[in-house]
Length: 110
Length: 110
Image (cartoon, rainbow over all chains, first blue to last red):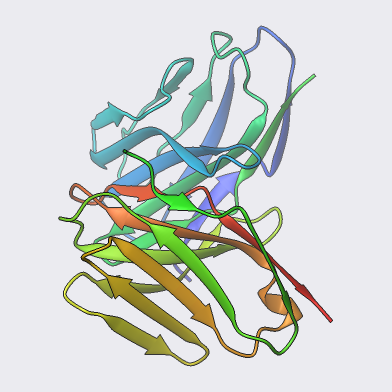
């Protein structure tokens, strides 16, 4: 079955560490996205990529980095520069008819 | 403004109809979407409507679009406890990029 796989489902990070969240899709979609979700704030766009080897900053890109070396993969790195990284992170890919979302990664700083 | 706006909470009795409202901002949006998010999960596409349509019905779901007022609504008939979730509307502004509302938490009580 086609879909998007995010891993891990839960992730704990110590302050000062970088962590990388995985996102893989086998839908053959060109566009992929990373969103951050905080309670009561909806989804905020971190980065998006419309084609391999190209990506753009979203509304809250500071403290995050991405790469898009393969069509199937769009990993997100949460760097130590991100001051408040505890959140639920959602990856998505899209066609014009809508987005397909992964099941999310909950990141907690300890 | 730049935001897609939704009320934060809606509480309905099981068997009643639910109406979730959304106000969007970009009159050139091509598609408008409704997504459902259950606890700890990603977003699931429920339905979408093309901007030249006024209404779309899909089983228990009815979407109404008022382009003049930039108002979108989702009606769920015969609401069940399994409909309890967060519902997001979204508008497409540029190619493949969606702007999400803040989400409406629907609570269904017996």
